[in-house]
Amino acid sequence: MNKKSIPQHIAIIMDGNGRWAKMRGKERYEGHIAGVESVRAVVRAAVKHGVSWLTLYAFSTENWGRPTEEVEAIMELFCRTVVGEAPELCRQGVRVKIMGEKERFSAKVLEMIGRIEDETASGDRLTLVLAFNYSARREMILAAQQLAREVAEGNITADAIDEAMFSERLMTRSIPDPDFIIRTSGECRLSNFLLWQASYAEFYFPETLWPDFGEEAFADALEVYARRDRRFGLVTE
Ligand code: FPP
Image (cartoon, rainbow, N blue to C red; front, side, top):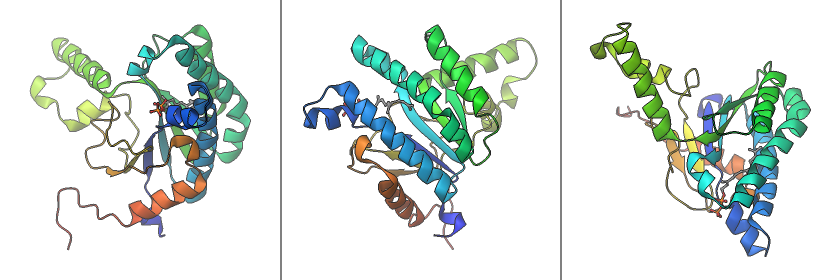
């Protein structure tokens, strides 16, 4: 595979942890624990293949509606993983960024977010963006509110607003749009993930449940991407 056929930015909706657990007679949270192994494997594989940006949808704003025990288990798992994983991430040159609304998080989660972002800040091979309490519609509303304020304050005119200005006010400012969006477990929908940024992304919906998605499945996904013909609304010569 040549360098050009490797996506610069891959975004993944990690789906199927609950089904994976149920199939084994386990609790849902055990599926999430198994899912962390896949996170490790995919980060390793992304570094190995020279992917520069990897965004993982770890917790959507809608996920707060899940049973309290499951939400708490995901928060706990997030904190535990983030702290434990920092040295290995640094060794691999991975910089971590958390993307989402921070208001609803406990002090402990906020502390962990600060720690992992600080400790990995010098990583220069891969930026791992963890979408945590993220909602694409909410992100766009916040950007619209910000622009409205700037217009009201007289700093910009409404007519000057263009795609670049809007993008600059999203949580993904300074992150390139995803080239390739993967959702595991056979579900074929975006579920409020990167709606603006996905405009020209290629999509891939493997049947594999997230805890079964490892380095090999990641390499298969790269093969799928390499065969795609991206035209960005133009024609192929
Ligand atoms: C979707 O599967 C998965 C989630 C909502 C949570 C994913 C979280 C992790 C893998 C742990 C987060 C930690 C880090 C460090 C990123 P589902 O529960 O919707 O599965 P189902 O559709 O089979 O029920």
